Length: 449
Image 1 (cartoon, helix red, strand yellow):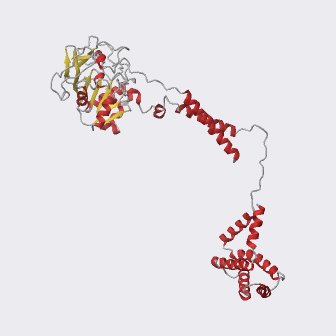
Image 2: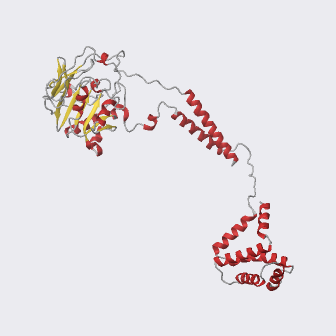
């Protein structure tokens, strides 16, 4: 036990030293600033380019919102059927596959509301079917590293607020909105017939789902200026597609300007039901190790690795011999009372009360015979009378007690209570005569331990 305690204390000391070294050597990484040229459009992000403020506002206002961390294919199964509005913001780090684009288009056709907020919403013109609406984007100046997305003055420099083009559901309670100077504008027209019949019309992969307009009605313009439309929407099958060409208007840095918040609420709640923000394509999918991600950048992962190495080292050293084998020291830990306790337990389980009485009475009779000054084989009457002549014990009671004990030893039935009573009476005789046999036995047992 002492060796194990030493090993445990050694391990604790080593772990403590490693924790101290890791804490001292740990340098907290500085939080990288947000850049509009490389924004983070996740609802988890609280920086100026993130959407944390909009998500928290909708959640605390009683709207049903979730962070969608699965592929668009799951929108048509299980809990995905509750989603009525699906929101994709910005150029997502994880690109949409063709299968995901098709699944999303099918979901919209079945009645879903798809909200796309991005500055690049061009449709592949060659892939557009003749006679359908084709949407193109007119881009403004690109953002640079010098622009601070947290500075509204830099983001909206020389850009006037836009008023609604017409009263619609999306412009309700909106007086004006404030886009950034990097906002693009949209225009739409009927796609002409392809001049090259052999041209491959396979849809190219886009960072965000390609705008679907096949079979749709003409888009409705809600905000427009001389450069083009800022917000449009159109029906697609039983569903609807809404496109806003400036993510800054719904980001943490720009949602507070003018009536941008009211426009965002109108846009996302136009279809009653659950609103799902796409976090899967923002890199927050279910396949990501959430535990490792939670402790990323902290010394916890380093400490866990060090603890694992210590455990492996202990297991390896405990399983290897570094010298010749030595026999363990044989220490006799048995006491003289263990045999007595074992025999007593066996007799109690076997209900062998006669054996218990025999063990106790035999020793008591020997002491009584010695006290009376007669031989051990003398009769009960002689032993009792001799003891009565020397002390205060009644001869008849002592002889009766001795006879009852001998009857039990010779086979007379005896219960547990009766055997306890006999032993108690024998101990009382010892106490009256001052024999102190039990004290002597205890002293002998203590000396043998």
